[in-house]
Length: 425
Image (tube, rainbow, N blue to C red; front, top):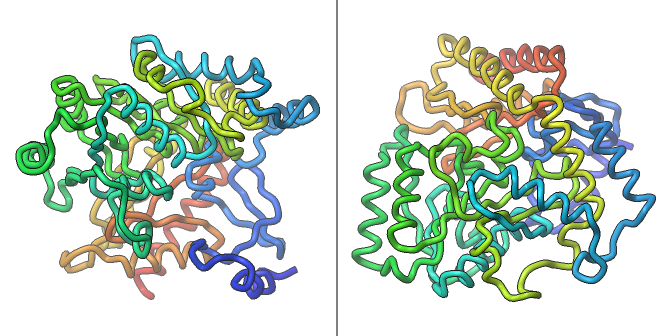
């Protein structure tokens, strides 16, 4: 079977709205390597968009899922519950930052976690409005899409967004937006459009994912916490992409001196199986009536089993610490390329949530074309990279935290070749 044969079939079978970055059709994968249907090997620096932080087909995760499959695959926890759901909730309640009693609910996707966090915040406060940040990504469901601070491709053509959602600029010094300006925008919003006593929640990513891997400054995080405390607003940390070791901590909020009231998570939680969660303050989480939260597949037994194994692997193999080691090595390689690649405008990211941003060589603005060439040249050399950013000018690096040293070094060699080739193209 050839990739081209499947590609010819996909347009007649799959809706056009399902974007596909490559036409590499996977046959099998192991840790940080993927083989397509033609037998071609690729080094995966996407990890399913930060999902398989513990690597493709991690032995411990696969064993846990296999053992669970032999017992039962689905009963719906809301009908016939199971102990490992309760145990995983206990583990997350302990692990999520915050020295207070917590509760957890399991759902299926990151967008669903965000939706439920908003529901919980509204139930707790009796308020409706939500504040989010430009450049943020919170999912493709209607509330998630409404909260997302990027029109293309997420909102275009889908009509009116959900009401009572307000956006303020996210501080990015590189693009001329300071923390002071961002906070001033919130205050202006309170003066001109929105009574703060009507705000149920403020939601933000500790590191923006799709928005370009911009880490929220500590000053912003502290100010948001103070605003929430002042006005009785629920602070939501969207850790869907930042969670489970990626930033050098189990959760990215551990980099700050403040904690959120609610935390959403998914992606890296279950090593490739669909599982998401909301964890937060007990009194807030318990605001919803019985039956108001959940879902048929929420907390599926296979995903729960996988998540237990993922958390074990992260702890036993010290993957949070390894994320920092890998990120530092990658940043050093990128720094070493600056002299030859004038398009490099910024290198950033905590842990192994690393990105490089490209501007035009003459400094006249973001260079999405060069960024696309980097991605394409990498794929020609069998290295899978992802782009992101409001301007499409950021390459993000999301290899599994378990990547072998020799595979990582091989990828760094390819990356150097790729960048030089993109410059000459």
